[in-house]
Length: 182
Image 1: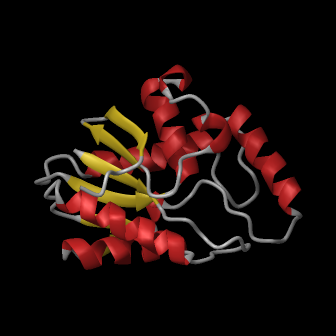
Image 2: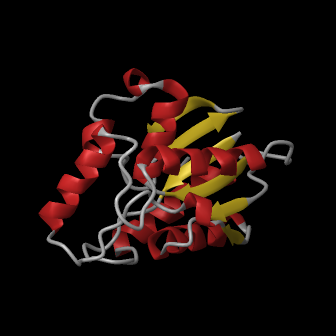
Image 3: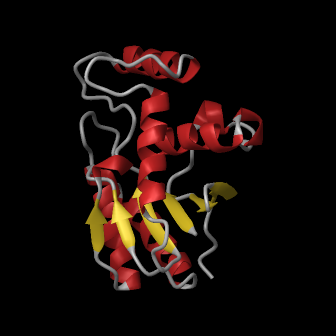
């Protein structure tokens, strides 16, 4: 079992922003939820918002977060273009999953990267957790289960901060659920 954790609420800045205070609280809550699941390992995307989320989870679970580039988001706004132009590019790449923007993988390639990460965990004692990003998680779910299996609105609005998606042997068993702190 792998729990994919969406990073906490991030600051509204281009590039690689960190978490807001609320994002750190969300991450600590996710850590408390994960502690009840007896996870044995914790991985994180190398992006700052994910690393900070993983650090909050690690503080609760006692596990050291291991970075893995395969968990990185599929596309990230660097501020070099207006935000509206970035959102249009995001939408285009979600519609045409084989469109690869300069310097970034296609949505389908990003999903394959996350799938390779999951395949590499096979045989490890689990369950385990990985802090990642909504865009790449959605693309993985589109590959594994299809668009119709996604909760209403997830394709349009994304995965909420610190929501959990559980994958059991490449089968989604929980999608974008907010963890209950108890």
